[in-house]
Length: 205
Image (tube, rainbow, N blue to C red; front, side, top):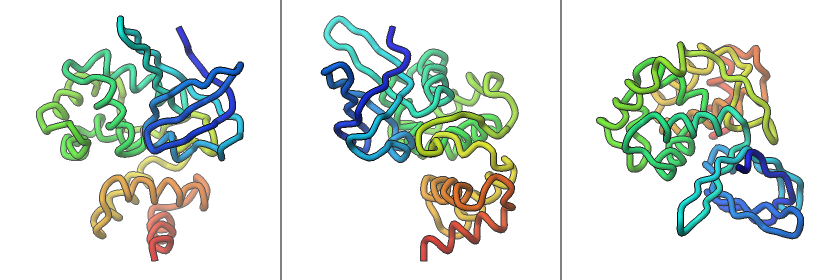
């Protein structure tokens, strides 16, 4: 079983990366949050891998953090009716931190914004995973370029409140999540909700 893949990034598309190692190029399906953290072409990259084997195909799914890979596995293993494609869409919609918060808080409306995922399936995800993700908490993890999957060390309440504030200002959830993650990268983990919102909003102008 392939657990990690390290090599040269030779191609990068929104949901696909090709990593060459030992003279072999591996096609890896990745969520958008991982795409954001990939290095420039020609640079070394490491991805945490989930390998899916079937009689007619072998498909690799890659993530910039172990946490994101493990969450992907949790979704496809524990939630009936959700396969790798929808799980990848789920992790492409918003960061892992926001996904875990949404499940912990029972926010089916946020999860239902994922393409291919209706309200009933979103509610099923919450029922199946709420006791497994625990209460809302900051996610820790290390990945390439600061790990887009894990804004992590920012105070979680400030992160959540900043995302909510931007949504109230007209941002889409995914845009708000990405903007706040970038604000955390700029201001650091001690930034307040007000500072995060101000920084995120200023970058849009």
